[in-house]
Length: 78
Length: 78
Image (cartoon, rainbow over all chains, first blue to last red):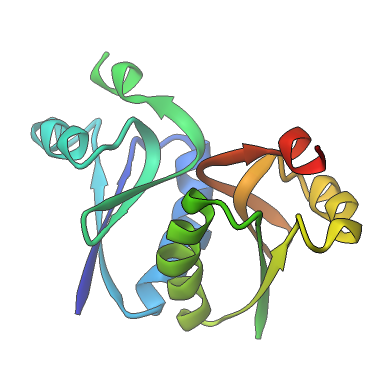
């Protein structure tokens, strides 16, 4: 199954995107992994190298798609 | 089936989002309508009232999700 990683930070915009976009993508042939970057800080570097600049974002087969705007990666890094 | 409308303007960023995000959402239980706002200019007002500020964007059950950034609505309106 194709892989997607949904990066978020638990923000309201993130939750909306998770409940609509990421969930539908999960039903549409992708295995979606959900990563909370505030909790899994060791995944921040991986998200950045995939091109993630803000959350929420979903990386589908290596390609980053930012969905609306919740927080920048510098906000996430604090 | 739940409805989604994918608004785009034929731009490279739009095409990437269409081929990955919109197509997966279409496989994930949504009936996705694809609207090219450059060609269907009579749909611009509808997109704006759904909250679309840039393309590509997908409106899922009335809620707008902007996916990366291709062009602003003012660019689309020209």
